[in-house]
Image (cartoon, rainbow, N blue to C red; front, side, top):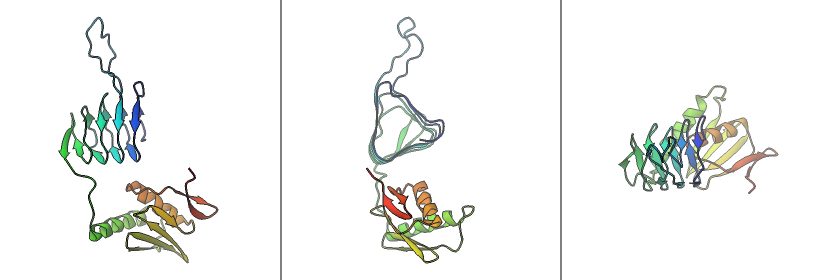
Length: 195
């Protein structure tokens, strides 16, 4: 959840895995404020359901909305209706901009291009050591710092190797690009989160 985001749980909100609720996003389960009995103000009370792998950057979700899996919503959108799985949506009010948008299979060339972008993002961050070597082969990114090599399996989302400053930064930069590893430093080695 980003800064100034809010989830109103009065009627219940169901969130799937890997849901990003960006800065200033709001999820509402009720919409009445002024007197509905004497003034006839509209009443809207309903739960919200959001699937897996959903990105809501600075978006507002109204009561009763159902958002499917693998959905990206454009920033500053007002979501007042259901969004089917795999959609790219945006606008005020929200419109489906592209159906069957996700998931999509990237070619090896597209994957290499993405890894190169992440390498560039890392190397351009203040304080990141420029002599770190990146190698990408068969969906595995290896990061070499001195004699230490850390392997990031981008398909299985695993990390093997010792914890280094570079591997911490690379893991964090991968997270910023939506590639999340449920691993943490334990006594100087990358270990899976305990569940």
